[in-house]
Image (cartoon, rainbow, N blue to C red; front, side, top):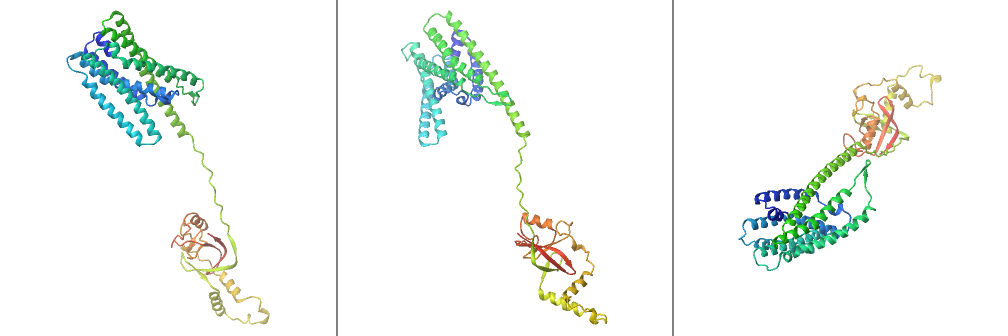
Length: 426
């Protein structure tokens, strides 16, 4: 209708009208991108806001086809124009039926809501195309009624939009007293400005401006007075341009503020240190005393062999036979029958100096003294701290990967024999 006003009332050239039309297309594209979810922005009656928002979007999207048809009418008036909206009507009805069939097949809730929104959009599209078809038939003298009657679908749509806007306004006033406003860092995220902007769009874009422009166009074609038409059409065009500029500035600032808030939230999330959950320390297993000590002989740096009672007796006999018999020992007063030969051998072994070779360091950390033997593989040569680390992780021997059942702690070293009195179960 703005194109009608520019061409018929202000007598602008067609190329300037096309430039203005495509500028409106660019602004329309920006508005549609910004309006991704109007139903969340305005918490009102769902049906009313859905129908109004879809009506607004479809009206903007179908300006493209209307502009093409109207420009052709102004430039080449002899051509039959009705085939353009007729073809578009067939395509739109086909898409509408496809959406209905897809909805019947799909039972998921969010998909059904999307299909319903698309069905409303296609219904509005069919109405707009029918209106354009009637207008093209009127231009080709195939429709005998007046221009007021030709725009019957547009008059009906304006009435429905007015009724829905009244419902929207009533619910909007109610929700303004109940809606809680979220707050972040003391900054109130007020959405009343967005609601007011869209409400002004609904009032002016869907009712007031289309009503006056449609009235002036009908009066122009019906050869009524033209002086009042120019004044009213000029006012409506200026109001439309001002609304587009206000919306562009408003949404630009809105996007900038939202980006600032998002960046602040990201900074807060990076600055907030997540409290570490208290680590539950596994209770350390206690060493238990053996009732009967176990004796080991170190065969190599990493292997220990258990010394049996028979082996100890052999060592005792060997040591007894190697003890020199002196005259002082054979004296009756020097005999001590309470002292066993084994203890005598132990005392003699204590006199042997401790071997300080390279095998007396842990095979894992190379720092501490080895004092642990692993059972049942009898591998050792590691310290207590390294064995505890093994118990916490793999619980397997560090050499043969055998599952460990017990760990023996070497408490004393008497010559070649190593005595174990403490044991720990894995």
